Length: 434
Image (cartoon, rainbow, N blue to C red):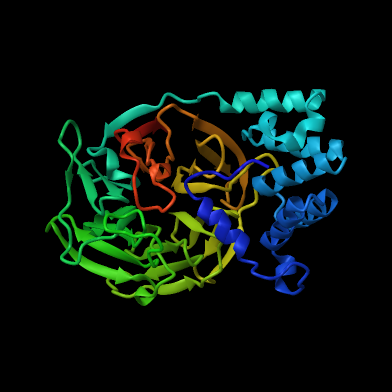
């Protein structure tokens, strides 16, 4: 079975470890797809292909649109002598627009001469072709920036981009102005992830998290997070709000700001959501730890009473903010909503940067009029030569701007050291939406 993707392989590992129970143990884990997937992998390693298939199918029943489970069930089916079912699962992956190196995977040796298998290879090859123009909006100074979050100030056209490695925020003026870094607060910043501008209050909000990849970070860095606010007019930091009181095991991954100034924060490490009320210096739990697999990008629905959450391992969810209830956002059988990092709602559609699938892509998810389900997908850009772990995005002036080459995968396995010789100048791409 082929390996997982580079940037957030740790997210999948955390998801698989979430069940945490020994093989054969019953209880809540029997309803957890990660539990069954883990048992399937153990059976696969023992070469008990029938048992592996049985466990993968149990996981698939609980999580029917998970590409990794679907792929592994196809591989186990091929090994267990069920070619038709295996081919059907591969065909579904092809319809999703995904690519896997099927020809190099020995698990599919028995299918290689089958016409349906050859058709899947052709469909996946089409999905792998570059799509989109890849128009560069601007570049960022410093190949070792490792950019993640991006925000836009509609009042003057400025952009802001956060640096994971340098622990800074780059301010990009409109036109041909020269980018420069914002001043740091007295206590400094950790890695800077999600960003959002609150125009009515003139604030730039930043997610900052302690990560091994930050300047001064170390392997095994205890996860901590905070949301910090910068007064754009005064040119100074005015607030720093720790997530979960600054406890280890939490982070500040992405955030969004409501019209009333409330800030919503995704805690990917703990699988939680937090809310910072306008003017408050405390983050209160909106959805507690374990509510999500790994929440990433956030987008508020019109009216500010519902919040779309990109759960990296489970797909896109919608949260009723009044009831504090979450539900998956339904999608057609051939639409994959997993692996979404950046999420933007614009004119009734969700725009997603997906770096947890192959090929990496920017997709438009069409919504029904009530914003209660996804009705289809359009791939706007995919597999561009400049793509190297695209991350977050923002809508501005009728276009989508997104970080094209964050280069997260250029860190060594310890997550601390950067392979400097492999780095290139970071760029933000622009995709017209209107």
